[in-house]
Length: 302
Image (cartoon, rainbow, N blue to C red; front, side):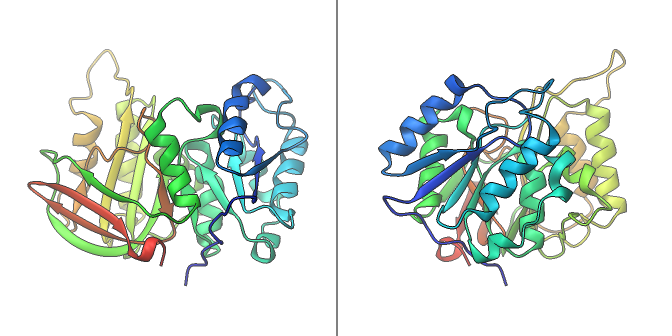
């Protein structure tokens, strides 16, 4: 059974940390202002603004902030400052068990998939949503994070897509960034997709690499017993001088066309401007029809 951290109330504390790419203090300032306007207190990790090559400090410094956030006795949420690359380097150096004693929402996407995969394997719900450096850039994306943090729910109506496969299901939502799910394969954080709604998205990948990752998921039985597949933004894809011959969406469809579960394309989440927030580790209703897609959470959680 999935454990749901408590929803936030005015006066609660949110922590901002950097586990991947460096983000500057001015880049995070709007997020602090918005969180304060929501009635929340904000504490920033002491290493959050440091730089070490492309990273927000050394592996040791980023681990220190991650562990500080996990251990924090009163905070109710951890907001990642940004993505990029870096969480994979420190995930095994952190002890996540204290978060069971001091539960809190972990909010982010992209590189945050590493942390989300660890949490969902532990049975702890988390939030796939816009990160601190993007707060305020898109009002809908930012507000969708607030709704999930405060337990106000989320019911989404999505436009139809030519490659969608109709169907209805109720299941737990797992997933995140496709490249990170691929990188976690074979590790302790490899996700279980059996009877789950798998959400995937990605950015700036070669089309042949999308194909390689999807074939790998298929060969490792990650696609065979899904309850459904939800495909978010496949943004700024690249091709070789000799074209691969399919779009990212067509590549994904080719990998799952033989199965019977519902499939939804162009779900508005991921590396896109309107990056709506999703609970991971929670059960959702998904209805895919020729008229469109309806997506909602069961009791906004379990």
